[in-house]
Amino acid sequence: MKINSKKILAAILSAGVIASSLGATLTSGAAMTSSAADVKISITDNEYANDYLFYNRYRLWGFFPIPSTSKPSRYYTSEDQTFYNNALKAANYCKSLGFDPTTKKFDAYIKSNNQIQRVNSDTLYLSYAKDNSTLYTNAVGQAGSITVGGVDSSFMNPMSSVPDIIAHEYVHLVEHRVAGWDALVKQSSFESGALMEAYSDILAELSETNTDWRMGTSLFKNNSGKKKCLRDFIDPVNTYRPTNYTGARASVKFYDNYKKLKKDYPGDYYSNIDNYSASTIISHAAYLMTTTGLNKATIAQIWFDSLSEYGSNTTPKFTDCKNAVVSATNKFAAKKGYSSQAKAQLLGRVNWAFNQVGL
Image (cartoon, rainbow, N blue to C red; front, side):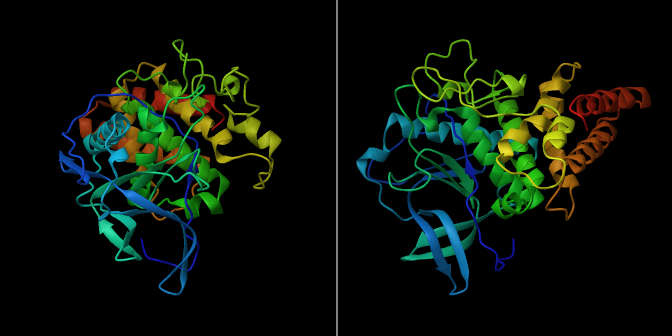
């Protein structure tokens, strides 16, 4: 991505986290860095800048990893181990779909020699938000790094422990390298921003061993029935997102149909609504594909491949998404050698899902 004079903004994302076993040996006093299947991951310190003048011309906002930092002992904890494993799982999953960070290196900004530098990196940097930053209660995936903040521990688990949230953030990095989507896109086009969130949600859910089609269920404590979540792709309208330990439901409206969205917001002007509220239209369509008999592997490959179908369109609409997924489905069927009848059935299922959400 070429540097331009526009602001480079952090995509601020609601967060969640999983517990899993450690896949590498950690040694205190040295950087936590590991490599598996060509995926490199390093836990570092970071610096938050809310207005950093870059090259005396470009202004940057966000978290910047500091690869050379010597980590204090608090970084070598079970939370680090879980954070690392969740990131590694997400990276290897995307690699299995066709994303190679060694050839599509992250366009990263890092703090080195007391200056912020732009580098092409095949390393994924992980870090924790500082208590006084604006991201302290959120998570962000930008410029080759994933940063997580804190939570209200009275009813939530650490964000670094929720697998689909960490995967969601990683997919944002993939979107940037494959489709050219970044925070500038999210800021300039409402539907494009919603698509970014939808793709991250969809591929994050599909990366789970047991996909429940609800984002961030393991973020919330006392949630054995998995009803509490950040976004419900099975039934978006009835998403149960608690706001505190009493279980009080957040007053957030999520959509499951594009026609309903346009009835409430007939033009291109969206007020008092965020990208996530509309993103569930697209993620609901992905869920509906599973109800037609399509398996997870097929759905995941089609959605991942569709990221390459937008061409130079960096501000796509929801209709562009449908066209991209249908195009990827055609190519998938051809690559797999489907018969004309099998191809027609596959396309019929994909189109049916989009039709059900008003597209």
